[in-house]
Image (cartoon, rainbow, N blue to C red; front, side):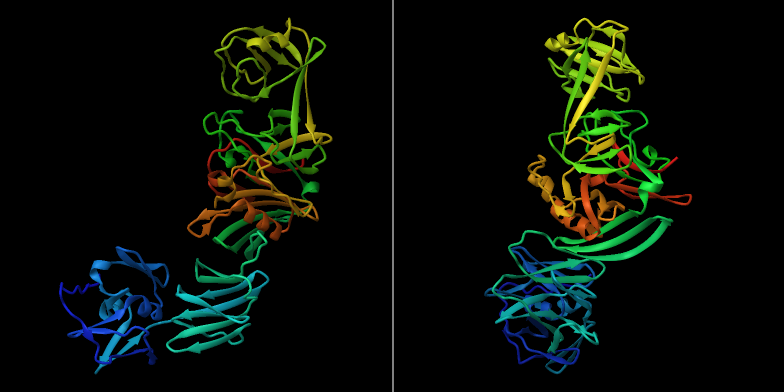
Length: 546
């Protein structure tokens, strides 16, 4: 606990009797002179703290200091001395806050500190990245085509830095960059394990940039590689986990996996994909009804219709993957006449015809009059009319409400009804499909168009955990999750597309994110689960071919 020195009302400070200050034997020259009151010396807070490696944020009521490894302190302005626009603090108090040893010899004050160290400098096409051991204040200066970055309370031990560095007193490191200064020069600071400063020219290209670093990788199976990566984005650091499955079409199948209790239930991915070698969450879902949103096809049966024209992944009988944004038309052949189906596995609305598959698990209710036709193997087994219909887990149901009951005509048990659908664009021999979105990449091109897929600006720009399924140009399957936690700020959708491409994706689809984002893989008898573990409505699983 620090001891604050508060001067009483009406106390007048006399100019300091030429006190001298030294930081690690280097003389300190102040733009604003120090003040003395008796045995106490007061220094300009913002200026002096910066020289000692602390960044000061001033508000009307308080000043917050930040330094070191996420250390901070807040001081009420009532406990400081104001002189014009400047705030002064007792040197003893500031030194105690920052754990700096102070020795007084006559009118000289010797301060002993441990400065931050410049650990590395990376020059990339997206700018220059400075990695320091701890947080420090810094500032930019532009002159002609040279930008100088001044890092306070910093030294460099780099033997061969890629740019020019000079040291000035007291313990200020200057980095000299050649950047086109006709453009705005920006700097972004990020605290992670170290303190990273990203300096770059601001350009009109809206494409976000990220510096990607692979931290570790291991083979969890002969053809499955687990990769952990870190990326520095404009918003901060992010953690990425990636599964790269090589030769997957020869050895595995990619299938849709659903809750064991049926559609309308939720289940954690590890239970839903109990026999998979790898799995990832898939569709969005309605948290109220727990029903999946968007296209969902399992074993050739449509269990959910597209939501608008959002991005989807279609899987053929031959394990070919198609990244598309489809529409769907459902119909039934009733007494030789085609009739339109208005929805599938959804609560019925008035005057509509709805299809319920054998995996639908919720009671079907309507205030409008209902007529239900129960089918098995395309044959009518029962026709009922009441306000409550219970699925039996073995039958397909056609349920008509209100005026739409006429579409079912005079169907009786034993007659045939055939359900068919048309997907646009079509996929030959469609076996499975999921939808979430938006589409990020197609054939190497950035195709992100959130408005066309009816995503809000708030959703697009949110820094969140994200999931992605992708293919590389050579056909390897990628399952990607970006985390949001204490070490990772999450990403918006534009940055997600850039990261996916940087990780080798050639075609990519964003999946449900946030707390639904989950990646699972097996390594021997061990199951690794990365992400939220939230119960979900649908997933994608990689299973061995039989």
